[in-house]
Image (cartoon, rainbow, N blue to C red):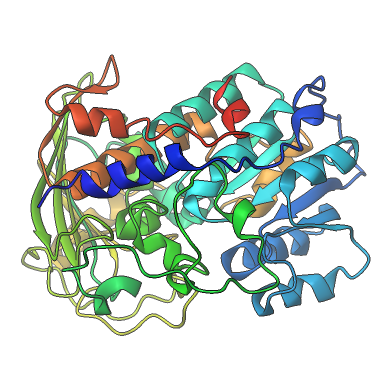
Length: 475
């Protein structure tokens, strides 16, 4: 199979397109950035961009902190069933379908935005918000392409008054503080290997991997602005399997199981073990591999070099219902973990193994879950022997949403700013390219290029944005 067909067709369609989008946003994008100093007794004026499904959950969580004053709602499918709950909560708040028009009309009334939209949509909204001096809470992963994440990090660095937070909640829960304390105390040290796994059913698992084209065009719902939904991408006609979470299935739109769950499983190890970017990503197993949507199961090997006095480390990622990782002796029982929230499309189905990780150091082995789940030392006998050597783990002063809003007020620092979340997201971008191309990738960590695959290296950037969206790719 020629794995370039999908992208080449995509580029061809984009080149043939002659209809350009309207370009609201130019006025505000050219405005001088302004970040308002928020007083201790004031609330953060926030706009919710994406108010259905996960975006709606984020909006409600931010509002429940009591620290936010909601000034605008924005969603490309405003009025669809999944947006109604948030709309009813804020009946008198101005509503928009186009974030650019929202910033044009209300930019001087907005302190911060939450961005709960598909992976490929994160980038232009985030770039415009940062350019205007607005604080940004954006769902994980930060963006769909390596280059987009790079530009987002550069924009955040250019505007140091802007607060950024990626939405991996575990970075403000027990997992974060335990991993930090155990690393600082030398309990977690000399880690040489991590097994990361997410073996629950995914949305595309019932699809035909022998697909030869994208699904046929359908009539878009009257509530949906399909043109704006596509953002900087182009070349797809509406189909129900592109929207409402289904976008995650496609290479062109989402980041699959790795982008969805990787940040909840690998994030603390990535930060506190100072992993940075891998020098090699090898797709060891890709079952049901095709050129359009993610494999039925994947095994990916990420290789990280020695870092200071820390040894070289390998992360092996497993997804797919029949692609369980090897389990060490003394692992114990793995039932449903109450610390792991259910996915947006229903409850977590009982599985043979919880989403989580196994961390192998030279002296100890650790078992961990996802999100806020804490680590335990295995086997149990070893844990009992280590009990009196474990440090006290501090409580979190704020959940992830409160942490963001307090940071907007200058009272805390965000725990998952772009400087930390960016390289983590780029690890997933490289993993996705290995899944897409089906080939081992050699990566130059200094130059940030793929050295052994020209096509994959081009995909670090992806296709050029369609006309009217170029402005967001400039820092």
